[in-house]
Picture (cartoon, rainbow, N blue to C red):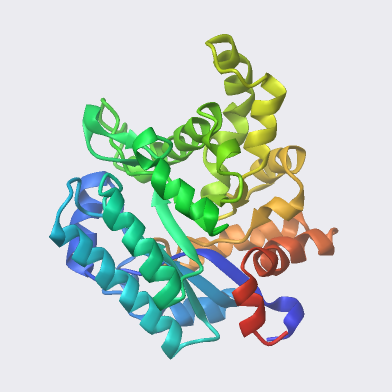
Length: 326
């Protein structure tokens, strides 16, 4: 693989417990490809070779507990250690985002940040848009989580922010339109908007936040937030709100199409876009379809394509750049 063709996938999962994953899928209306379960690193490596991906930054499945406890802390620690072991076993192919405990467990989350960065060598952390169930759920900009953001800001950390698989108050409309398809993109948008209007995106500006799936609904609703949230009392001006939305990074998993990429090209420069696949939640064929769309769209702009596929990630993750042969 020539240096020009190296791709870096910033949205790539690993699953330790296939049975738990399959059960969760049934609850939210999603079918992970059978050939990807039970997941093993060789499954990802085979897909990466077919997709031209040199390095994948692994992210853990979301926390499975909605309460503070030793079981949750232990589960997350086990996942992070396992991810670091994969990176040691395949140093040219895998890096990882650390998972954190249920975020209300602020002390344990701070401990896991320190352990993951200082001992395991994580490249960032993976967060979901909200923590908890129903009316007790808190979005990531909640004041309770400020000590976590403060520590991430001190470290100039990278955060991969993924929409939560939160069911709507009504059933999803069709078996082919489960929660990951209908709700997750809106959850990503809600978390991003919360970070912006609360002032947390501006306050913790040293944190580099990547929104998954091109931000879900974010690019299309940012202007709605800009005018209407300002009207409702947000002290930021509409232009300041738009600027803060533009300060996120956006990755392409399950979202790269002519329509969405055209919208993104008017919203942020190519330096703010990163390549992602969401494998193994989807098949190699599905990931390849989106990758082909991305390549075709930027076929006449090789520098922009190189930024998205590789160069932006190398700038965002300095350790990644130092450990890979160029």
